[in-house]
Length: 475
Image 1 (spheres, rainbow, N blue to C red):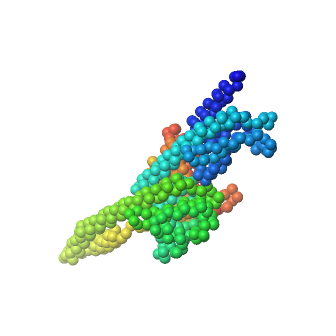
Image 2 (tube, rainbow, N blue to C red):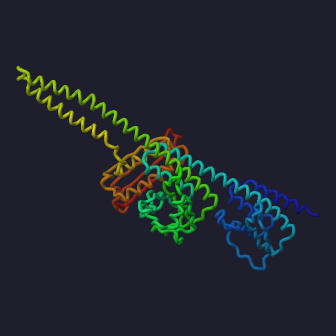
């Protein structure tokens, strides 16, 4: 006997340690193939996954260039099991001098494969726990945001954006039932071009619609080719989830999370977590709507009280004062001050008219959300203050309301939401500045509008530069 087994045993122990300590699934798999090649001296090691859709992985191999292996080269195969499931197969090929693999090689590889199955199972459990944690944190963040933001439009956008990021989707879409019995897209969050998405409709009678109206989720492998999909934007997308937003037996709408064509299919775990997120988001939307209703009622009550006070106290006193002045003007000997008293009476009458107009205004419903770009940007920055922990500083240059059309404004707001969301996810951000400028010419001289979002860190008293996002579009 020589000292040869000792080094191989040491390498085996080292390989087992490498495989057993990794938690990232891709890292575990890479350690497996590297260890297999190192232990056996194979020119190439591959791990072919039996079900690539389950983890988004098809094949892991040793690094380096693709070296062709002659058909006469030695081959060694070893299955890898995770509990009772066949996860994949280790395939070793090629060896120095075309030497065959030995029984000892096979035994070492079998030990490595057993440890690999345990490590892969642990990595899966860790990834599952991390996914659950992210979705739970996302649902909690949405609930918090909805209970602090204003306006139904902001609430829907918050749900769509957060769900898109959690699901690694290319778009987050909210659909509402239509009067005709179909469903239409009312909110779309996407880093890509959203043109044509809002307003797209699922016509009545669609099989997908029947499931959604019945409170059942719909999972689609390829939106572009699935005959159940009828919207005119379906050709843009591949795998998709359509999840009912249902609370208390009432269907609020549908959350759709499509991925790009050819994208990774959703796993069973992702489908489950997204469905749970949709249920939580629906409940948060109902609570937010109830909160807004209470706040609106409080505003109405406060306005009614102010209107009554103005009517009962101010108007009556002004009217009484006017009567006194009118009576004084008509007394004998008041010729010297008659003109002055007359003007005073007219001023009081005018004041009474203005106060009554104010009372009527108070009795009207509050105005809707601002329609101009300036107001919409201010609303977005105010909504992001809760997530950022500070209100962004917002500046405008040029006639942004008059010069920026709605289609460009919508895209600018999408870019603004994405930039603010990214800033809120970065640690240490203490200050955010938002600037909108038009006209803002491009380097080629084209007229356009520019958005700039800059965040600053807290490590230098809030003065340290962080990240700056610049977005430009032609007018």
